Image 1 (cartoon, one colour):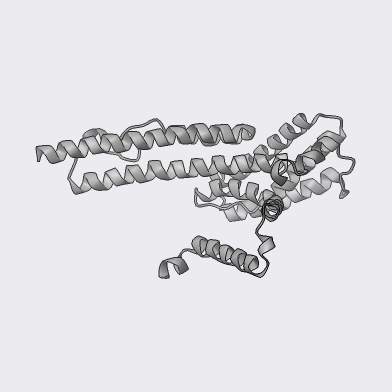
Image 2 (tube, one colour):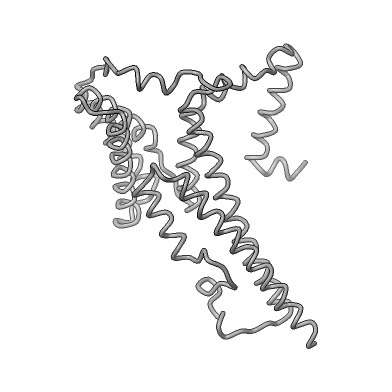
Length: 267
């Protein structure tokens, strides 16, 4: 119980589950595929924001300008479509605008050493002001049916955009668990090596020299760079890099087992 109270994320998860159980108990018809599809449809934007914010929070920072960034990208799509560009071009333009906004936030935080909360709070107002100047404070209307069709229910009540969000969430979850696997396997071997007093000059700096595998520090940085430069291909990058991470984890476990077995045998 104490562990549950100390873990805020776990407490929130069980609170949501308990609320869902209460609603189902009051009205059994609430538990249906249609209800789940409606809940997911209303939370798609939040899911996308959470996916991007997770990567920022993994660096022990925060970005409070995500709402303004999403609004700026949405306006970019509307403006491009109203100017006669195709849907694919409009989406690519919005992704480029989002990448530039994120790069500017990164420049403020990393380059100028401004605290993330302060920098992104400033860009929140900046991007909102750009939106007002871009649209003149007016609604963007006359959007084509090709854009509206992306949010219409399709297979089992989920829209094409919903399936895309679901694919991104699965890819992000796969990548996150892959990171956990590589990190935990590395730390586990380091702890066992210290217990058995294994000293190897080749791995004196354990943060730079890994036991084995493909996904070293440089490759991880390259993944984040490619994810920022080509956000439309994030899902493919996440699935590929996640598979390499699990291969790294398996390699480390195998190599660590062989190393510890050799040490215990010689001892």
